[in-house]
Image (tube, rainbow, N blue to C red; front, side, top):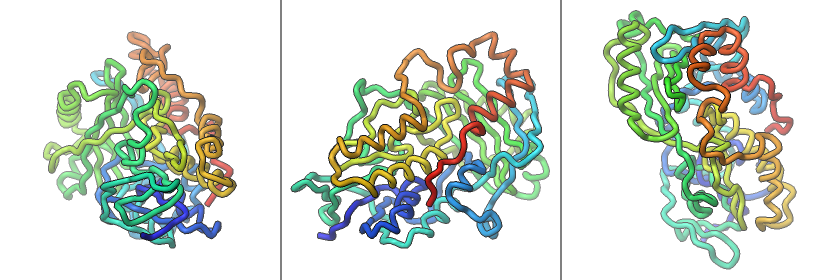
Length: 374
């Protein structure tokens, strides 16, 4: 049996950030992930300057041999209406490919990694956790996304019926002909809200790569909504007529709707495993990074790993992201006050789409970078 001070299940941005943040503590940390890296991870994939600053990423270094698409504008609309385009006059975000970004962050971790290793069992034994009858630690951290096996230890929360966002998307490298026929521009992601306000679709060009997808607060007729959107974008010339491969599905929880606990005895959940994606946008990279750093602060100071000691982490999450409001009547992407037909009018407004949709809901420009840094 190999003993560690803590084991992190999931080597994505949350898991790798936590491991790196704990390297100066002397703690013996193991990262386990079911996949090898670099691994395919389809994601619209943009990171704000706040994330780059918090992680201390050298943009020149990262941009060498990797996709780093500066974003200065957004096209936003409601399906069936014309879009509104806003120029922010500066770089407000960066498009990345998750296969590159996640591998880059994991490569910064000097400690041991057990990749291409599915977690088949997690058993409580003598106050410790034993994973796959091989690795043992008093603390296990769930960083493996919505379906993280560590999150399953804590159940689905008080109600047991959390609202899950389902999404389908595709990302591919365009041929010269596809690139020439694609009107979507790299510095201008496109966001298209569903008319029932239960989700939105996107077209995001990152260099020579194109990402297209749609997410909704449940799986009801997701494929139908996606197919209708793709056909509309093809007809408008926004995307190439010939798209390769099939769209891949994934799921996640929105912060205000998630009910699963964040801590228990010897357990912490971070990132999408904790259900931290921003409620209005579904964006999860920044919450994943910040939750990992907040967890690192608590782990450094903890004298034991009881639920009461680890609750400091839950308090820090609530202070940073707000108190969860499990209101089943609340809309997904938009607050209650944005309703039809008002939403149709608002989505034609340059002020609303820029100041509220883009800068507040998607970029969170009013929120300063987390003070804790790796």
